[in-house]
Length: 339
Length: 300
Image (cartoon, rainbow over all chains, first blue to last red; front, side):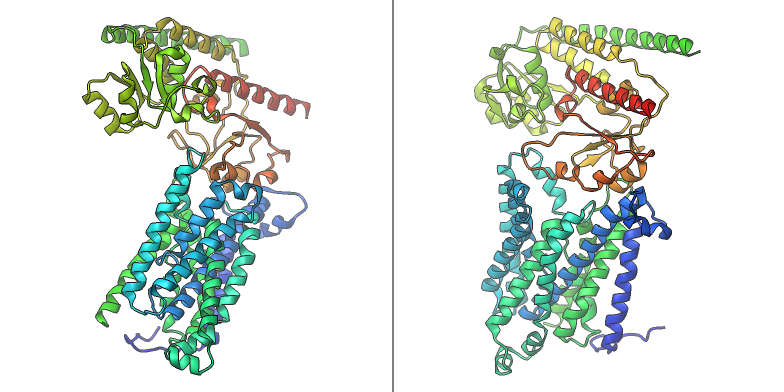
């Protein structure tokens, strides 16, 4: 039995134990994600995925489930770490790539890259579009709300950026020669990993990896920043360098994720929020555990969506929003109580 | 024995056809009495499928507007004929200056638009989506009546019937087929495509048992079903996520139950997305595909 938690108190779990158990959880959920779906794969046939002769199970594992699980792992980690890093930099627990408009702007970039036909001739245009979109929004956000840790400024800046991104996305779709573009994007924006292929993995995962690694390097500086900007600078933290790493890391990780999976919201909010106490409020440790934490949440959610509805699959972004929105409201109430 | 069952099948078919013809004729008179008006000379269409009917039945000088979709050959069968005609985007304000004496709309045309046009005193006739060969025939006859082109319409239906009757599928031999559509896969029992596939003699054409117009099949179930034929659309000239999904690399690895690569059939969407005479072409493409698939089996 777990001892009851006292509100406001920090509960120490040994960090290696926490990290280790999260990683084991990720491995188990990864395996589930490969085996479970509308077609159930028996454990005994996993080797068929790499056999000389293609079998139905082998093809399903290699071409469908494996890319899906890899993307859920990478994108979940990216969103978790990006959330933790943005929260550290902006010293604001509500900073989340989806909420503050980064995902929406990344989607705009990807939509332009796809519906202009650019990504048809040059496939890397898709993640590039996503990353450029994300970069623009993080820079804008930092200009609008960077030095001001007030929750209100951040959320308002995010609302403005999201609204603009949404309007421009609609404009881009109206200009597209595809008569179904708006219909397609309506669903794509809800975020999904269904029927992605190894091509998507090759397009997105390298950038996501670079982005996540870059974000991970900001840990010590973010730790120092909790003491205030002046103290951090006196400890040798170069603020502009830190900002640049968080901004570029977020743009790479979130931009590439959104360009293949659409908008999967709230992962970057829920995961750091759940893990913050367990790591004793340390931003550097939070960054590290948010990677397996985000991966676990996304893998679990992406496996669950295969069964939650009978007809067309529920979109992953819908499920994460259903989980995440109550968390967000709870956080807002908590911040209001604490003044 | 086979002979007997074929005869019986034919008889049933004849009875069925009689029933349809009687329905048509009575419907025809019913509509004629309603539409005792003069011949419409300025016809506007607000829906891609009514565009096809108008373009099929009328001379250009009697058409004042078709939708902007009508010139896209990917989705519009008569795109060539629509070229140069004034386009509308389903907005009342685009229609009013054209002073049409008849407006054709689809069941899914925006309600505010059609009711506004009706309130302003325009004659608006709404057409249901053709979800079966029966509604397809009805729509053509109905269009013939309201456009006062009854003879042309009857001819079109006749030609269509002859085409369809010419198909004599070797029934009873199941061939597993999967139909891919952008943004969906599979076909429900109650759809125009469902009727097309049934006519051709595909007995197991979908791994879903959904009864809506469009079924949803996940890609893993398509692979598991090991289809012999994969029916899909040619790629459009514009970028489309839906068509991109139909090019998923997993389809390259799909094998049927004999381990063969499934035959891929291109069925242009404009042959069946609207109910019209062009559906007969879809029927013959698929009938040919089925015959080829059976031949290949016998060679083996």
